[in-house]
Length: 229
Ligand code: URA
Image (cartoon, rainbow, N blue to C red; front, side):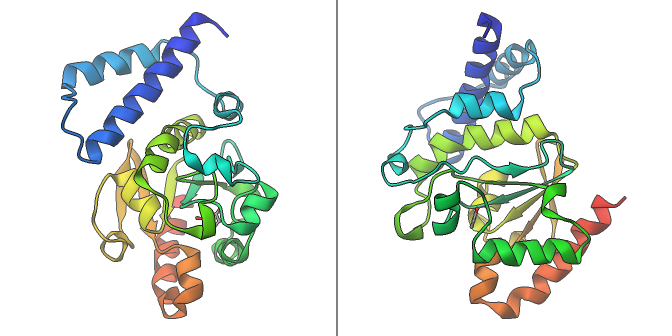
């Protein structure tokens, strides 16, 4: 690894981290437009990052407390050049066991939803806001999201998808840096780093609330229309 690559990786991480803690309400760091621009310029000086490079950097991550109980880190899976990236919340029991995203009950439902819009698992890329299972499947905590989010941002940048689908509150609110409820965000295209992002309900929520399936069906049809354009 060259010194240049190291610098650009650090730059990317610092920038994502500062933006995220700013979003969380941190007022101790005033990040001027100029500073952001400088960081951006520094980040541009290097070769494009690959998913392998990001995974290597993640390593045997111990950046937050979730490492203590996890069985596997769930980095992400699918086509590294996918035109559609699906972002969930975090690994559940099965995902933790297998080290693969969306392989449990919610994942099976998601696979069916994708099939209904002519997409196979191999066509897309699956990833999550956090990469380690929270004990008892509790919600991710802010410090865990802060530690993990730079990796998701880098993954999305490395893939360069045409479209993102953010599933559930944590994916949608974290990527869009908003507190707006998912019930209001869903069904619309938003923008994440110049990429159209459609927010919808999480498949696990659908398992508990089957009456919301119609909403998700409408949402994914919008996704399909843009994907196939
Ligand atoms: N739920 C998620 O948000 N992600 C997974 O990978 C599995 C279930």
